[in-house]
Image (cartoon, rainbow, N blue to C red; front, side):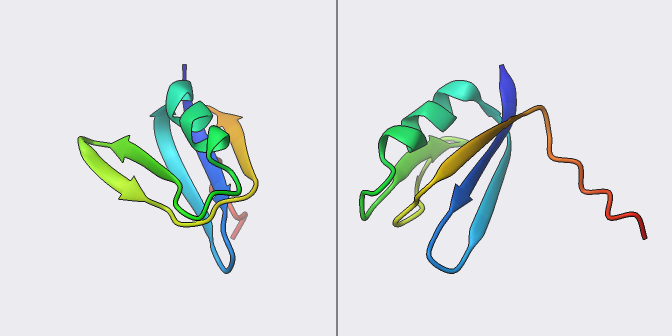
Length: 66
């Protein structure tokens, strides 16, 4: 299943779209750690401290209605 992982960091919100649910679970297990790591597109990515993290099935709708 693919979807969007939404990561809340100290000053940032990061959206990782079109990822497998297993990536979300991997990140979720690391919530509260100082270095949240996962492999995206064959690269190891360090998101730093992440807490909390949410899942949105499919992609996030970016229609702002403008």
